[in-house]
Amino acid sequence: MKRSSSSLDQQLTNNDDKIHQESYAKMVRRSSSRSEFNNEEKNQYNKQTTAVDQRVEDKTSYWLPRYSLILGSFSEPPTYVIHFLDSHLTFLQSFQICSLFGRVRIHGYTLHPLTFYSVYNYRTNSPVSIEFINSETTIPLLDIKSLISDIQLADNALLNVEQKGGDILLIRKESNNDSLFIKTMREHQFYKNWFSENYNLFERDNWKQLEQNLHIRLIETTDQIAVIPRKEFVSTADHIINRWLNVAVEDSPFIVLICGEKDMGKSTFIRYLTNRALDHISSTFSLTYFDCDIGQCEFSIGGCLSYVNLDSPLLGPPCSHIKSNPKPDRLLYYGLLSPQTSPVRYLQYINKLRQIWNIDQKNGNQKRSMILINTMGWGTGLGLEILKETICMCCPKVVIQLGDNMISSQNRNKMPDLTLEWLLQQSVYVPYRQQIQMNNRRQQDYDGQLNYEYIKMQSAAVSNRLESNTSKLRARDHRLLATWSYFFSSSNLSYIHLPWSQLVHVSLLDNKNKNSIVIPDSLERSMVALCSSEKIDQLRNSAVSINETFQLLNYQDEIFECLGFAWIKHCNKETRNYEIYTPVNCLTNINLLVIGAFDTPDEFQYMFSRVNL
Image (tube, rainbow, N blue to C red; front, side, top):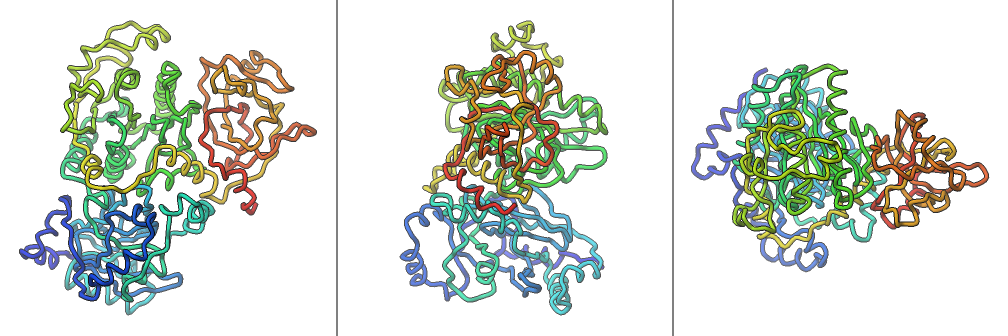
């Protein structure tokens, strides 16, 4: 049965509804069309809200959709059936969503019909919005009724779409809401304000039932509250994807490097670009994410570089898609949260990551790949030197720089415009070139001729930051949330005895630090990286035996491939075992125990007692 959205197209031509014609434009602030929500109720709400809640909920307002309606619900816990007729909807907290006709896009990703997706709109980041897109699809009636068990409700939903157009959304509870990670965050003295599920109910209508039953909150959708990609973001993403589809070849990936100073929205844009590109993943095209921001990793605990072959959308902050299993396709543990003290070693890690990808690509099914490289938000001084060398090393086809156009690029305290012409006039980073014994020519090095398209975009985060007083989490907070999520989001956590005689111990901390020599007792109630090396026999021969453990003191030339992380609860001297908690399923290949600069929550040592193994 073919369902057309033509009736909605007619509706969009009305002068009163011009906002629906601009799916990518900024939403205007609208007040509720319901007279019941009056000023008195607003004042009552403001009195009830605590100071902390006011800070967290700044500029989020209660809003009833102008056209969309809840048609009913079915099953238990309830799944709500929504006739989606507005240009955007946004819900806070986490939920699962299904589009029956595939006329919905969330942060660049077009939802496949009849498929549920998880969305994580925690207050830690700006929430992503549900966006209507015009399309025509053919969905078998039996398939739709197989999702909506209430036959009368299914018929009513289909009738509404036939008469008015739009799409039918199914909204239900996210199963991950019951994970220990979420439960802990909602009890945490500080983070509970960002993961809260308790709202003040104003009206007893269908929309409020979502808050009551699913613990999600409908909010007004504006570009100051939710992420609504600007036209520049959309056109840039489409331009890059078109180049990838038309230019990429199997033996040479299409590389896009995204850079910019901190708080410029790099992560938000790269997630959007990722989601748009996923629409084109096939047996011919593949998408890879290089995560090189060791201070705020997207797919792992801080201090790592990794690459991930992506086939599912990113619809939430890092803590929502940092999973213990499966881990990134390749994970390298650098061990520090900044390359400031070891910049040459950091560049060696980036070079190793690209070499590993090249080997894996040749050994696997070769495709026309696009690689998206996320970089650190450090664009001056040493950080700029590292970034310049990274560009030369990776030889991208496109460099995208997010910045504030109101600030001159000539300002020495700001990142300059990284055009190709500018880069070719700059000196190389001599310490690294000397380390790898490479010549100092700028134009032809690494993989050949350096040549890329430069795109600079105005950061949306700049205007939002100026217009909002909303408190935001620091980079360290995001690293802590990533650590919480890694250990407690899944049910794979195990309690294991690991013999320390089988391991070579490495401390990546400063050599002046007493912990550079690893004493097993000192590792109790601390995190470690579980790593593997194919040349373990060589490393063991070069290690020294201290305190009945093998310890590698000269590690500067080693790059540690990480299989996961563990929390050491106890060091048993009698059995010479580490008693650890880890979500890593297989420990047979682990032969290195690496100690780095972890951001560990203070409450961690008490949390594992809550785990039912």
